[in-house]
Amino acid sequence: MSNSYENAIELKNVTKKYDGFTLDNVSFNVPKGSIMGFIGQNGAGKTTTIRGLLNLIPINEGEIKLIGLDHKKDEREIKERIAVVFDELPFHDVFNANHMGKIFGGIYKSWDNDKYSEYLDRLQLPRKKKIGKFSKGMKMKLQIACALSHNAELLVMDEATTGLDPVVRNEILDIFLEYLQNEDHSILMSSHITSDLEKIADSVTFIDRGKILISGYKDDILNNHSVIKCTKKDYTEIDPEDIISARLNDFGAEVMVNNRDEMSRKYSGLVFDRTTLEEIMVYYVNKSKKEWR
Amino acid sequence: MSKYKALFYREFIVSKKLILTQTIAMIGIMIFFWLIAMSMEFGNLKSAMFISYGSGAVDYIMNKEMKMLVMYFLGFIVAFGTTLIKLGDSANADINTNWRMYAFTLPVSSTEKALVELVLNILSVMISFVLSILNFAVLGGIYNIKVDFGFVVKIWSIFILAALIMNFFQKIIINRARTKKEAYLSNFSSIICWIVMIVAFIVKLKMPNSGSYYFNIDMDMLNIPEKYRLPADMVDYPIQEPVLVNLVEAVDLLGMLAFPLMILILMAGFFINRRMMERRYD
Image 1 (cartoon, rainbow over the protein chains, first blue to last red):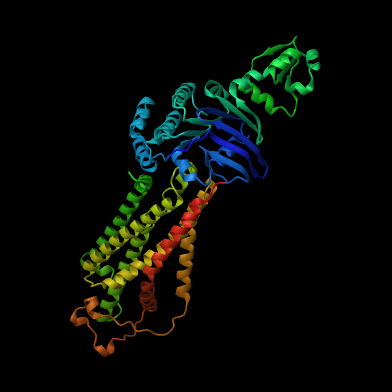
Image 2: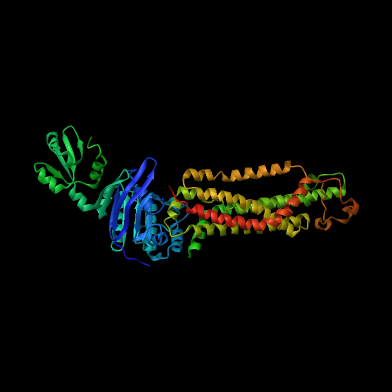
């Protein structure tokens, strides 16, 4: 059964309170057919948000919809149509790939064993070797093979590429890009490896200390932000309201600004460098300090 | 493969080693005791193990009773052990691998998970039944004791009931565990159950006997040879075994209640486990 929806994920004013940490009014959408990178430093609230939207933890306030369905009322149907990948393989060491194929084949109605076999071959995963003897990269590949073999419409990944070497990460990212060839497929990928997201994400949401700081199309975010490298004197002439945060050193300052086009007209004598998601993240994390070293 | 088959398959693969080792251990214990029994009856241990009460007939009767006690004690170990076979399987492994959390993302309900556990409990009870009956049959043959089948079933059902009660509490603690610390603590749940049972046993032993009972021995049941049978007016012989008498009475009473209680415990376990399995993380 399939329903029509515009956004694969919709979060509206989601709040979750713990002692010492609050996920505070988190709202963002993941459009259908796209991949969203969910970035933030450790402890920012990425995993809490993902657990909330998967109903692994109860939320205090807010609305969540996955593939157009309510995340609590339609939980069973949602689980049939989505796949989740965690940062560590949740399968016992005694299993092998064949076992997992049989187990998931019984659990998911739309399990495709041929597709699973293809992924195992492509990712060069042995079928009869115990998972306990797999390397970290092989474990992640197995988890992804299982996730992609039941025609899931939405793939939710929580730090799935953390700890993997660049070769394996590239291999996995290629598989995700292929997965997205089908415009009914969507991905939410949380990570603090921003270079991966810069390669494949369509949109990015940045969370820090339980609050969403930025959310939008990746290219727009990258184009809108810029780093001005200037002398101390020039730095003093920049309006503090225009500064997100500035890293000071002995020779001058590196200033992160938003709205690059307007700023470049306003401060025409200064040099505006392109920036990266990682830099944006670092500067936004230090936003409250304004100046830092 | 259907969903239930898949879940059973998963549980079986995870617990396979434990099931095999425990079943082999149980069968090994049984065979060991059978060999001891054969030696006591026909071999080198025959004279060494004979306890003399000063009278040929009483000696014969009392030693037979001891052998019956051994039979039932072994039956207890077998029934108890095989019923609890599945217990220590995967709580820690489930939590250490994050399987429990991952399972919440699968289209599997807590009812389905709890039902699989219930069926596995019933299967382990059936295995223990078969092994217990086998044990009684073999030892009964070695000792040349005709064992009353109804009595054996009552004894077995009480052992199983005790194991299921222990299983019930352990499962609640295990299924409730969500963090590594909770999983670690759940390992000690079996110790708590054993302590409760031992305390109950000691309290029972310390309780005064409610009167004198005469253990009316069914001569035919014990298959006592004619020359050792006492005259009818001496059937109330002076040696009494209060523990054995109380035990027989208790077996009679509990045995009647055991089956319905077993079903109650299994159903209660199902509903409570289902509730525990629904518990989310926080």
